[in-house]
Length: 250
Image 1: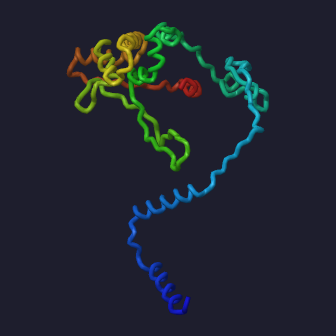
Image 2: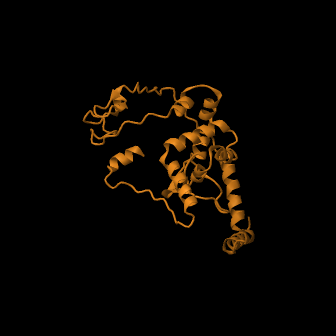
Image 3: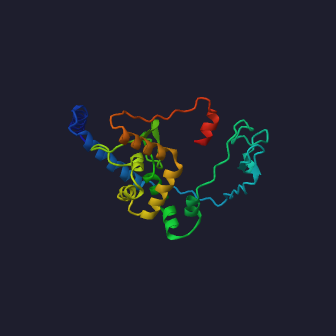
């Protein structure tokens, strides 16, 4: 290469470096993506295969806490050879679980078609019969790693007003002021894989044993008897309740 051509190349390269680029941000992003994808295809894949990894067996959960009877694996003992992740050496005392309603026992243990449908669609039944919906700001982490359900800030519950309106269709706690057949029709509209008679049985059961369902119905009857009365429902937390017990129950 002679001197004049070398000088010309240097000048052109300098001009390209100093001249403002006409490439948009979007074009630049696409160009880098194509280049990175090509680099990944050319880069050899590294696969590490090991045959010397031993299988670990935790055994059976045969160990018990001496205070509350919670079961553990042997390896879960702390340095003092105690199990302390359940009741903190008896400092937290939980009441015994109440006996489950017979209807739920049958749905969870027996094998007729309605029980099988309940177990297969249990999350749909649970959502349809809930008294409130969950609210939170869902903020998954950045990057391309495995899926992670992460919430930012506080988790709260959305409770619908007693009566539906143009902005609030019948849902959640509102449905407990209807009779079982009417409430079931509204629940089935969004859960068509569920069974009508299962919804009716669960609705009847909750109205019998669930205090929140009874409160909604009580408010409805009170408004019907006294239309001009302003009614509101407030749930107060007992300040004397052991917070360790409350945390454990949650």
